[in-house]
Length: 319
Image (cartoon, rainbow, N blue to C red; front, side, top):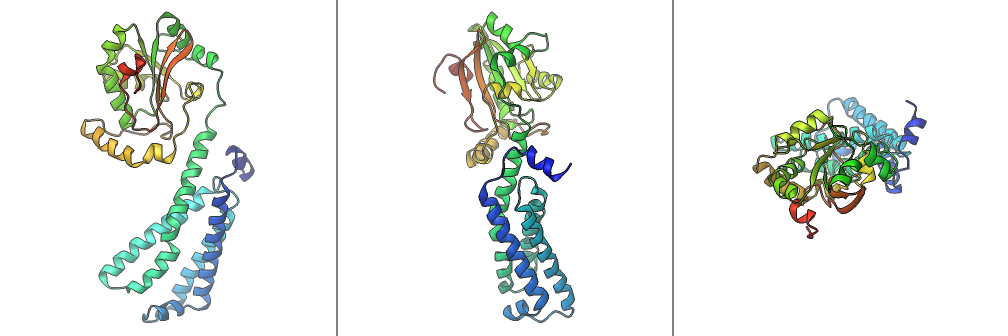
C-alpha cells in the first residue's frame, strides 16, 4: 500500500505538536551523530573516561544515531502513518537507559556518561509515547463506520434466533449491554454482575441482550459462563451498533488511568482475569434500555473500569 493511500486512511492529520517534536528529534539526532563522527573523543573527555581503543566503532554509533534523525524528519510528515519509525525510536530510547543502568551497576560507565542518556533518551519518552497513542487511536477510529442510522442499525442487528433488537424492543424493554471485548476484565465483571441481577431485571419485564465485536459463539459462551445463558446475543464486528448507540474510542485516561489500574486489580482478585484481546481494545462499553425502538435510558461508561448497578440503572436511579 502506498504512502498516499495510508495518509488518506487516517482521515485527518495528527496534531501539530507531533511534527514539532519529531523535527526537534531529527535535528538533535543529526547534530549529535555528526559530533560523534567528527569528534569521537569529545564525549569521553567530558566524562573523564579513557579514550576508546577503536574510535571507529563509536563513530558508527554516531552514524546510526544520525540516520535515526533522518527517519524522524521523514516521520514528521505524518506520525500516524509513519508510526513504526516512532516505535523503533522509542524502543531504542528505552533499551539505551536499561543498558546504561547495567553498566553503572558494574562500574563500567561513570555517572557523568548518563548526561547522554538524559538528552538522547529520557526526555523523548513522553512525546514519543503520546505519538504512538495518537496513532493507535487514529487507526482504531479509521476502522469505524460512519454514524449509522439508528433505526436501520437496530433493525438489521439480530440475535441467535434471528430476532432484531428493534423487534425485541417492541415486545418488552430490552436491557442492552455493550462490552469492550471478550477478554476485558471489567466486561467479565459487568456480565457477572448482570448475571446476579438477571432475575430482578426479568421480574421487571426486561429482556437482556449482549452486544460484542467477537463472533456470536464466543459471546454466548462468555454469557453462559456468567449466568446469562439464553439471553439475546448480537455480534457486531463492524461496530455499527456501537456507532449508532454513540459508543466510541476511549481516551488514554479512560482506558489506562490510575482508577482503571486500581479497579483492575480488585476485579482480578474477584476472579475476573484479563483474557485474549481479539478485537479493538480501545472501544468503550455502555448499557442502555431500548423500548419501542428508542433509547429510554443510557449510560455510556466514563471509564473502562466504571461499574454500574444494573437494577438501579434500569429503574432510572442515577448510577
